[in-house]
Image 1: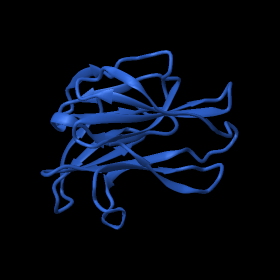
Image 2: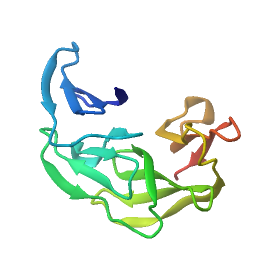
Image 3: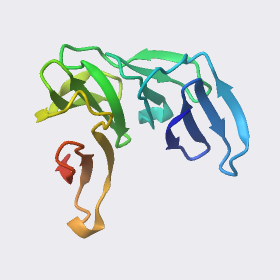
Amino acid sequence: RLLDIALSDQFVYVLKSAGVARLSHELVLDASFTSIGIIQEDGAIEIGPNGDLLIAQYGSTVRRYNAGGQPLGNLASTPALVKAVDVASDGTEVFVVSVDGNSSQYSILRYSATGTFSGTLVGGLPFNPNSTSRPRIDVGRSPSRGNTGQFLVLSDPLSGIVRYVNLS
């Protein structure tokens, strides 16, 4: 089952329930990383600072791997990180969506390039733990917003609203 994709300058990474497939930009299989393990439910993959692969597997950690699939450790686990369902990076920082089914809320957490927790960007957003929809994030620049800085784009499944969160 396909879960997510991420693009680097050299490869296309496909997160599947059986691991990660690394494809050339011509979409030819280059390598498979099964050492990443089986991803049971939801998952997300992102290219992080330094070209690391960041994988959120609906658990309390976000795992880091090099481009060859070798483990590099995890982002710092904090009390704020309950269940990671999405991950995004602006090339210098990492952002993680953490959902808490007990409180029916989610937060967007911020980490440094080295994986050190640096705070909560947005917290206490309502979440329906019985829904299969998950909050999703991505990072980029918005020319229509003046292109004055990085923005995180948040797709909120409960409200159905997509909005910008300023990272500057």
